[in-house]
Amino acid sequence: MNEAAKNVAINGTASEPIASELFSPITVGRWQLPHRVAMAPMTRSRAGQPGNVPTELMTEYYRQRAGAALIITEATQVSAPAQGYAWTPGIHTPEQVEGWKKVTDAVHKQGGKIVSQLWHVGRISHRALQPGKQLPVAPSAIKPEGNAFIVDDRGNPAFVPFETPRALDRNEIHGIVADFVQAARNAIDAGFDGVEIHSANGYLLDQFLNTVSNQRDDEYGGTVANRARLTLQVVDAVLATIGADRVGVRISPLGQFNSMGMDDPETLYSYLSEELNKRGLAYLHLISPRSQVPSELIGSEISKQVNLADRILKSIRSRYDGVLMLAGGFDRSSAETSLANGEADLLAFGKPFLANPDLPKRLQLRAALNEPNGQSFYGGGASGYTDYPFLVA
Ligand code: PHB
Image (tube, rainbow, N blue to C red; front, top):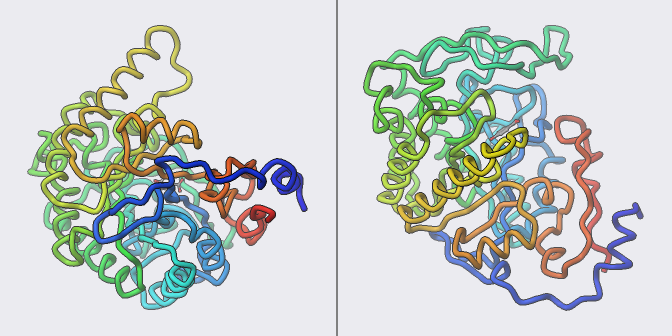
């Protein structure tokens, strides 16, 4: 037994479950969920090679976490060019769909629910990961800061600087929409309960939303409506294909990750949340704007950014009538507060879920939590992946 498990044995299991809103059921789209503790999408970079295929080990990882109200998978590429990191899984080949079937089966056998997070990375990629060693694509030919995580010619992982991407031609954009639609179909074939469309964190759809990465002069750039057009087209095409009541959308207003950060997020996200509200989605998933306020800010800059974050959250909440899921550094207490304040309906937990396969039970019992090990987040095998201990009964 490791130290964390010992603590649980000593401290954790005696208390009775505590009644709280976190453990009240909720209807989300076509699903009845038993509580409000969802598993946030997390890249774990353990897809089988060649082919970025879900493995038995991934099946075991998700099976262990089936006690989540809803599992959102790690971001999953909708096509080969949609990939931006070594070893992330896809959902565009028959082998990948077969691999995911085993995952969804395992989760369903445990009584859980799981959606596939559909992803195109856009410019957060590198030729080394692209079919035919082509340049990655983006709304505009603007290079992000930082490094891509690739596998080099000898098969070794390496960090290499991002490149200037190729701007998508207007006529190519329908192909991007079609890739999301096919991936959503594949997800349903693979037995997923639904999909989450990734329009956050500086990846392709977010690159279109954002003025820093989108300087197009066609109907996909410039005005707020134009920048939101691709996200809404993808959403509309996917919900027309599989039904709105099993489609979620993830957004990250105020996000800085992957060279994001726009001048006027309030206007864009007000518009986008009003538009998404018309679609009758299962849920809207928001990375908490407060969690995106940079920690290095000082003095009055902090309160300015916190006020902006709170305004954006309120603005989205007032415009979006459906189920709102919040993610971003929550613990039991802040999750309870968020539900009690009416800020959110569901909370997504990332690292705590990674380190605690039985997180909902632990939160309900107020048991001690295992600490996540950052060394094993990305890549590797079972260590730091499927060997985090369950609560000792
Ligand atoms: C990552 O792989 O680091 C990653 C993927 C998807 C996200 C955020 C980060 O939304």
